[in-house]
Length: 157
Image 1: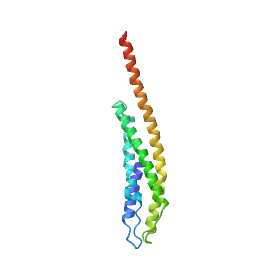
Image 2: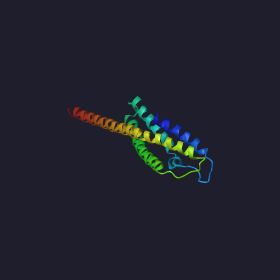
Image 3: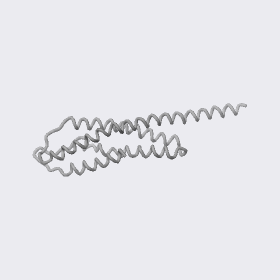
Image 4: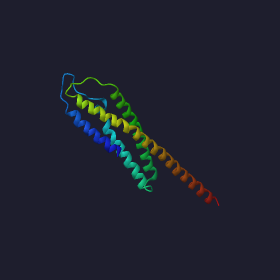
């Protein structure tokens, strides 16, 4: 859900900044817009889908499903931290823009503030699922080890 929200906000910012008029002071193009920071929400969507898939089909490739979900969650943590840093840099400085583009720049900064609130939420969700994914992988590894030890003990008799 957060990923879909980020993609829609990127589309909104795209429409907003594409409509700017070249003025004396230029247009407002923040670093998060240039890097497509809100479009990184696709990564959040893929991570969510992988977690749902690993939870719904636990018998089909248990290790590979949990491992992929874990890797995607770690990637989401990295993306959320980078996006938070870029958004903070964007909001900390504001160069003057043409008076015609001031309203669009101000609205774009408000959208960035909203997105800045959602990055820690995504970070905490991805961190929690990463921790639980590690626990699940260690349990699965311990069950395999216990099964192997049990089979070895039974075969020795």
